[in-house]
Length: 97
Image 1 (cartoon, rainbow, N blue to C red):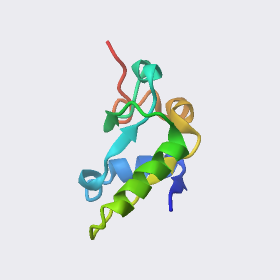
Image 2 (image 1 turned 90 degrees about the horizontal axis):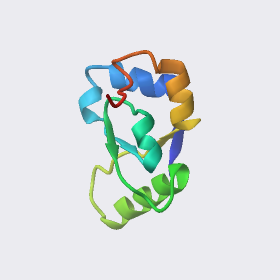
Image 3 (image 1 turned 180 degrees about the horizontal axis):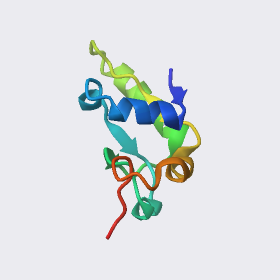
């Protein structure tokens, strides 16, 4: 099951030195990735975005039948909300130069 995290929860995870190395953020936006991204972002070009992409990734990981599957979460309200809240923080956002 995919759960939603509020942007403030994502921020706390990313700034926690004990948890930060165990987090991978997949940014599933298309061309709008050029408008900026969080500092840990990895971009993939999906057919679906947001919750749909997260569910598909989760389902695929379940098919692999491995132990220690990662927890899949979706950031509620997406990039625009993140950018509105933390866009001025260079620890949390990267903009193309």
